Image (cartoon, rainbow over all chains, first blue to last red; front, top):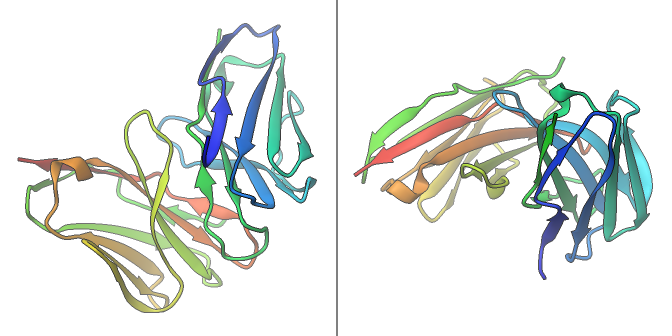
Length: 114
Length: 110
C-alpha cells in the first residue's frame, strides 16, 4: 500500500459504543494529523503528532482520544459519541511539523453516530 | 479568529473555459497557501501550493498570490468536466496549522 490509508472506511456506531479509527502512512513522514469534516463547514484540525508526541490539541472533547504508537500509525479512539459527531474523519501526514510541507490526506472514515 | 473565506458556489463554467476560484484570508502573517481538490465522497488532494507573491503555473493550473490584498486565487485553463469538484483553499501561518476555507464547488459542463 502506498500513501495514507485509513480503516474502516465507514463506521456506524451507537452513542454507548467504543470504537477506534486507524491511520497508517507509508511515506516516511514525521507528522500526522486528525481532521474532522462536517457538511458545509471547513476542515477542522483535531490533533497533531510530531515524532509520536502530541503538539496540537484544539479543544476537542475528551470523548475523542488520539494515540500515536509510532510515526507510521495514528489512532482515534471514540467513546460515548453524540449524533453531532457524525462526520468524515480524515487523517493526514507531512514530512515534518512546523515547516511549510504539504499534507497528504487519507481516504477518510465516514462516521455515523446513531 | 483566523479565517479563510471562499464563495461556496457552485461556479459553473463551460468546457474549455477558464475557471477562476478566489480565496481571502484574515491573518496577515500567513506564509504558505495551498489549493486542494476534493471530489464528492473522496479526500482532499493537493494540487498547488504557493509561498511568494505573484503567479505559479503547473500545467493547466495557475495559483496567484497577493499578500498585500490578502487573497489567493486558482485559475484552471481549458476546464474539463473531470475538473468538477470542490476546491479547498488552505492557509498556513507561522505554525504548521492549516486553516481551511469551506470550499468552492466547481461545475464544468460539456
